[in-house]
Length: 545
Image (cartoon, rainbow, N blue to C red):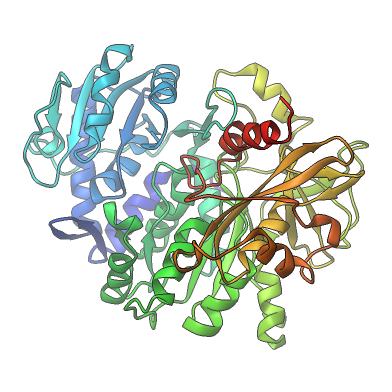
């Protein structure tokens, strides 16, 4: 066999050559921008020339601080395919974390969306390695900024040739992208991805998802969040039409309009997005999902009642995926097997409420947290999820201490606890740090949250452990009521609802009603912040410090 390297370059050139007319659509506040893969490739080539002119060499880090748009798509391929490493910065990180990761990665150029440049301005004097700022502007107008030196993206690339000799004889194990974890504890940790890893991840997830050239994908997952779950790479690999919604990500009416107008067939998002979309639909929001084949949810568990409602009321199938920044990110997908099509709707929903089955190419096992013994595939015995494979990180970037804790004996230790049934489908029970131990028995905060969110008066619920003298810990539920129930819902309403949904000893004694639950930078419930803000109030009320 030929020793031909697996490079993202091949995906890019394949799409430009064989699907030149397929569209990339970018939605902005002022309208929609459309171009095709051939035009995208030409602009990406100009970008590669511009990077070389700025002195960027193989292995240098180039950062993006941007929403999902067509210029970001050019960076996604132009930077790694010319030999540099793209560092996608999370625009929702704190100033402290942003300064840390830009300096830690030693980013030389910072490409910034015109809608968020003001977030970088106060930090500029703390950025030790940044030599050039580039504004991604659809308006074509340079904002009044204190960043310097600074240039508009289109001005940067406009005078360069639209062909570039992208190297194809490189080592496939060279780094191409770097992402940092969202840092709910400690400093963010860097994960470096190789060309080989991302190509194999795209092949495997593309097969598992059943993606085809005729699909149209809507990129709701931010492109700074674990490579948008790899969807841009899979989309280019398959030659799909791709739609980038920009600031419309949180506008449910706009998303529904985009889905209808662009004939979107599938999309991925965190549960928060699907909760918001469901609330919009329940309020009578206009929509047309006739083109939709599947929505995928990940980041945290999707409440069963939402999966059920989307399918039974709106004809939309939602499946789930599981992974992490360290896993590129997909590990499992909850797509029912072909012989499961004969199952009832409710039985198939049971499959889709799991975290899914490992995709081909990965080795996954669940082990007892104390003994390290691999647990039974019986859907009952709990264990920590361990993963290894060609697109799984083996260390954190310049962080040997955390690497030694997380990557041991050739496995990535996820700190996620779950069960695996005989069919190989994993059900996540909790994070090790979020499990609640009451009277020697474990309570899954995820299962309890989903049970509470099944109540018609509840919009969101997060459960944390409350220290207890008698039981060691008890569940504390933080609940956001639906708007029409905010003035009427009571603690007793929820406790009564849960009586036939969970074990009696799972029912929270303490329930706190909130206007909103704090979220992490990637849209997950921020339980660390809840512990810091809610727990002291409850303990003080109980007369404890």
